[in-house]
Image (tube, rainbow, N blue to C red):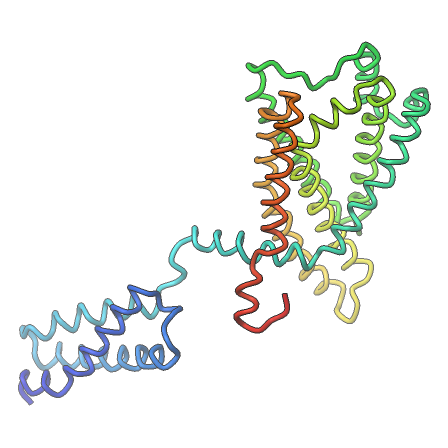
Amino acid sequence: MTAEEFIAQNKDHWERLAQLVDRSAGSGIRRMEPHELDMLGELYRTATSDFALAQRDFAGQPVVPYLNQLVARAHAAVYRGRPTQAINLLEFLSVSFPRTFRKLAPFIAIAFAIMAVPAVANGVLVYRDPGVTEWTFGESEKQLIPLVKEGQLWIDLPPEERPAASAYIMTNNIQVSLLAFAGGASAGLVTLYVLVLNGLSFGGLMGLCFHYGLGWRLVNFVIGHGVIEFTVIFMAAGAGLRMGWAIVHPGTQSRRDALVLATREAIALAGGSIPLLVVAGMIEAFVSPRFNPLYSAIAALVSGVMTYGWLLLGGRRSLQAHGERV
């Protein structure tokens, strides 16, 4: 067989393979039809065999570099991985993370209740009798009592201190969230402790400020960033409770298998929520200290709509396309 006969016998297959490779590069291999994927794989294997024959029988002929290039392009199309890490991250944030949030919503709701009950109870107690702060406040909260009695808040931030405060606020919130999440490894006991402790602290300070006429000023400060900040804390704590529940009640699975599954879900929820704390810290440092009710209301409304629109609606379209439950 001559080189010309070899080319004439196989060129239709090579041209079809080249078309499929071009299509995979343009629209992406994931968007190709199943029969096209099958044909791509079959033609790639055939072209590889043809290339080996051409190297043996037609060395020095133009068909050899042509097939070399074609096989290389086809190999890249067949075996390449996901396009980029950025696409993986985008898919996680737009689909996987919101779906995990909705799946663990019962644990997040429980975390909210566990923190809200001591917050309301301590807030009412301190508002009615500030003297109870002697046994309901920690040392850090007790240091703020003289300042509040003088009619001042501890959150007045000079403009030059706001960048440093933003970094501190983000770091502190991340630490609280991570502790609430990691507490799940103690069967959820540490998570419960973190929730109750922060509930007592927040509620007590709010009650103290209302007693001395500073309550609405504090509310105005908190509301702007609080929607995101508290949502993240409840998500991290919900993730911790999910792990704790797997330890206490593994169901039909072994405790180890149940914990592995719960940990995967918990890590996805806790890890994806950390960027939200960065946004909350920025609002807390740069918007909230202005004490402008309009700015705070706008920040709360915009952040709330965007956050919960994303968490409640994200990933539903892709699920509906596959006929799954949302």
